[in-house]
Image (cartoon, rainbow, N blue to C red; front, side):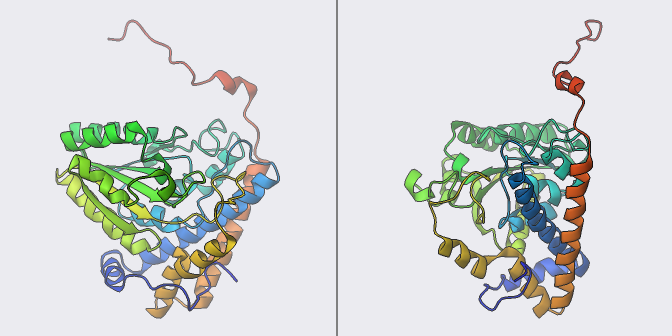
Length: 349
């Protein structure tokens, strides 16, 4: 069965939020959201296959199952906003509008990649789109995001910083230092916890005395909410409201967005800490692409044949990305020391 095929088991989207989003975004924009979600799913499928063929080196963390978080949140953002992510950031990069060929080439370590092949899977970057990178230090990226939020406020920009982190990062000290500072200074930070339940491989209830992660914000008197991360319109609505508050000077927001990853933590993780039946049940009931497709078909916005055509189109597009990456050149060895140091001119004040 194709990922986009309707299923009778799948839970319905929140009808009220879906209707509001349709009024705000329009049918064409929602169709583009579906296209992007399918692109993310197909991209990760082929990235995983390329890793198995040893075309991708190092670590590779796939985003499949979490597409509604990236697409919903970034549909609520503007191109003035800053985005900072963790190392499972392929989905965020593509949802932000980065060129899929450049992203795949970066995974392959090729010179045509978005970072010239020097960043790889965990360090995608596009300054023109204010996508300020995926970062490999667990929890460390939220402090960088707070700096961007401070800069936006200092410059009086009508912009926020959306910082993504996983549920496995919420107990890092830097996360709580950052939240306290963001609230004290009233910074336009939206901290999104992509709560996929297992961190690197340990269930949340085994490591956290508080499993309702929304409550983590209580210590900082910060706006917070729990969101269905498998409903793209629920994510869109929550982030849009948080952004409106932030640009109005009402401070940061902490979000516990419940989602689920279909693969292991990384490509080397067999995910033996959960059952195949559990994964299949989530796919049947909560798949974000199927839920959106079902709603669009029920609303007369698309037919099953049109949805299937999008799936086929994205499949071909990603195959072209793989071929492009495979055929691209490796970076020249001289690039190894480029951009490591900055030459300082003592004549410049």
